[in-house]
Structures are given as C-alpha cells and as structure tokens.
Length: 396
Image (tube, rainbow, N blue to C red; front, side):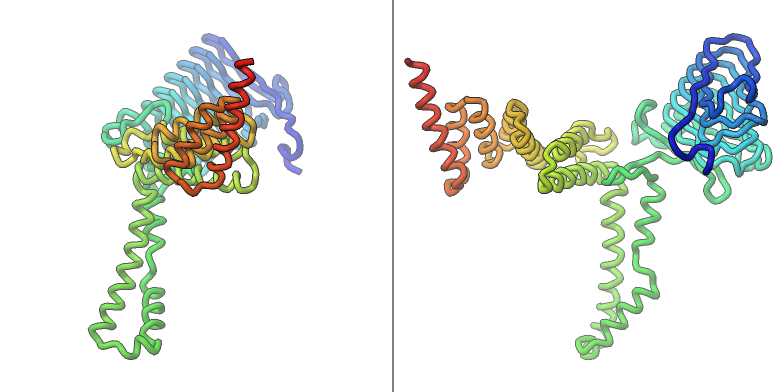
C-alpha cells in the first residue's frame, strides 16, 4: 500500500506569524505525513529538506516570503491564498497548483515535467518559470485577462482560470461550466463541437448507403448531389447547435438551469423529495445569479421559473413544510397568473395551514383555469366544508 492508502493519518504542521526568520523543515522536526502550512509570515525563508515527505503544502496570507521545496509533496498539490510578493522554488513534482487572491507570486520549477496545471482566481502578476524549459515561461495576470476579454466583466472572486502546457506553450483559459457543472474551457467546448461533425469518410459511408437503397437508385444525378449536400448540412447544423448550446455564456447558463430542473424532476419521481427540493433550489439560485456577460438572452422566461417554484412547492408539500410550499406556490402564481397547477398547490398549502377560506379562493381560481380538474373540484368541496366548520367553531 502507498503512504496515503487507508484512513488519513495526516497531521497539520503550521508555521505562523513569523517575521524575518529562516525555518528549515526536516523529518526530525516534523510529524509523520505532515500537511505543511506557512501562514501570516513576513520576510521569511522556509526550506523543506530533501528527506521530507509532506502530504500537502499551503501558503496563506504571507508577504515577501520564499519557500524552497526540495522534498516531496505526496499529493503533488500546492495551495496559495492571499499572499503578496512571495516565491516558491520547486524541485519536486507539484502537478496541481491553486492560487487565489495573490499578487506578485513567483513559482519557479526546476523541471517543467513537475508541473501540470495552475488554477487561479484573483491572481495578479503570477509568474510561472521553468529552469529547464524557459520557452514555457509565462504570467497570469487578471488585469491583462480583463483587457483581453472586455465583454466578460471578469470577477476576482468568482471567475477561475486554468493555466496548462498546450502545444508547447503556456496557455491560460477561463474555466466555464457545462450544463452538468463539468468544468472546461471555451476552446475545449469548440474542439468537442468540431469533433462531433461527421468525418468525411463516415459521411461518405452514410451517403453511399442511402444512395444504394432502392429509393437512392431512382434518384437523378441532381437529386443525388442534393442528398449529399443535405446530409453534410445536417451534420454541420448539429455540430453548430451543440456549440451554440454550451459554447456561449447564455447557452451554458440556460443548460445548467435545465439540467438542475431535470435532476429535480427525476428525484421527485423517485420519491426523493428532499433531494428534489435541493435540485430545484440550485436551479433557482442559478437563475438569480445569471452571469453578467450573458446579456438579455440569459434571462430565464417567467414560465420556467414559475414551473421550478411550483415543483419545489410540491416537494415541500410532500415534506410537510407547508409555509414554504405556500410561499413557492404564491410566487409561481405571481410569475404566471394563469398557471392552474400553481393555484392548486397554493390551495393545498393553505388547506394544510387551516386557511380554508384562502384554500377555497385558490381552488376556485384553479378551476376557472381548468374547469374539468377533478382534484381541484374535490379539494374545493372539502375546503368549503372545512371553512364552514371553522366558521361555526369560531362563532360558538
């Protein structure tokens, strides 16, 4: 078994609040399997000896501090947060680096093969250098990225980038999320769309099959050319539609909302009402936080928002959370006054809260919109009986 197999035995080792010191970490002054954290240090140098095997390495809130990594980090992971004018000299694999809210950070790798990717948010003047491959050297700077993508309104808090070695150069790309929340980049989305186009040899195979059929044999030469063009056009259109759906901010946003809604529907069908409510809540949160670069096309139609609210109301009814069900159903009727199902679920919530008069009104509204709704008819009759009984009890 490897050192990290089985239950975690990692132990935190924190170097904190030091100024102007040199700290040398060796197996003798470290616990076994340490998670090394350098926190709030200023003008310090931290040397991690060759013999050290740490689980993870983290820097938090440091300034003008240098970390010299000679030993191993078993997870090959580095996290740097809130640091200014710090440097890391790296002589062993740190394949994955996470940099958040940092400025003037320098990451110097002895070997380019020890680096795979750097995920960053709010990074300014982040320098990545490789002693054995200086042609790869590059920087990640949010100010420069904003200038390159003026239409994105990039946020230092929420927008994340990935920097990798692509085709012999260091490439930084904005991370986007597909409908299923899978993180990717715009370039990879478009590459996928390109790959979905039918390759020429496959296209020829399909066309030959069609033309070899009894119908194809009866076509004129002009009609055969038209068929080839039609199949090619359909392939191109399908690929373009795929790219348009998830290749734009608005398309990805709408697809993610729809994905969460469908997840809620599936959970509800499986009688997993709490999980369904969570999925609908996530869909509503996405609607409320549409990316600012989506434009007007990102606005979800009121009918869809109303449907999600109404579906969540059904979950809350099943869970016995009637006040929340009433609030959601009422919001759905406000968004779409002609939504009979929303009025019906509002009535059920009101009935459960002993607001029988309100339930009668809501059942009646549902019946105005759907006169043949038998459930609403039965609900109204019951609510009228309950309202009358309640009136008599209050009068006595």
